[in-house]
Length: 305
Image (cartoon, rainbow, N blue to C red; front, side, top):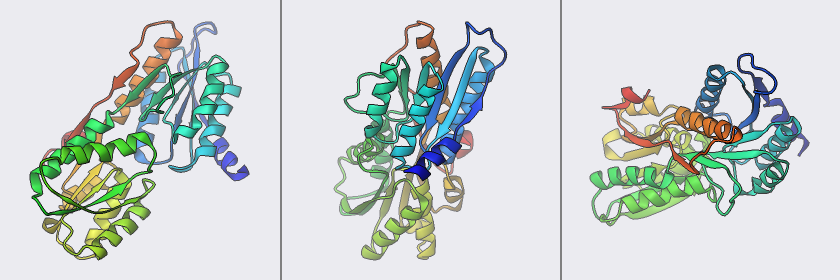
């Protein structure tokens, strides 16, 4: 516990906006899940927002991993202690809700980003990709290349995290109309290492596996490495990822990965922070803000880089 709290404490860095009078300054916290390019992009976008909006001060914090629940709770509590008026957070797990309850009780407004907390109704807004719809984009692509009887392996993210579960549900619904056999599915905690491991197990147990779907970017890159290590030609198996990060561009270029679903993390962060700032200034904000998603292939990936 102490080590996680220490990691969370060390993760906090402060970014201040330009000069502003004391009575107009808004101080908010910005908390992301763990250190991967997706969340680094979100953090950079929030810093750019603060720079462009004098009077907005942002304190940043990040957890140690995709399952660092205690670390994120410690960050939320730390932000409240530091006197923030609002928190924009990518919740690592629904079990951080009680910590957010305490923040709201202390007068702090909360905007969720990236994923929702089901049943938690105290948020000011949710800025996110519609992950179910984005999953359907992946499923529709797979439907276009697979046929009845083909086998599919699924690399899940962190089971129980709504946004990641929705990516799988959406993909499966997007596949409707093609009778594909699910050869296996396994949790990856959104890490490349587990992506390699789960993909290797799927490939070993299913020599005729036709496709793999990964619900996060790092496991997609891991699956690509497993395919390459197994000596399987890129045209023998279809690999579809999610996030367009963490080495996916290289794998698309190499022809090992066929497609991925891009989110727009910079836009998500900007919209989330803007909703929080507007709410703190008494302005009306939408309760749900969709930051969008798109299919990325080797042919069009330059426009998403």
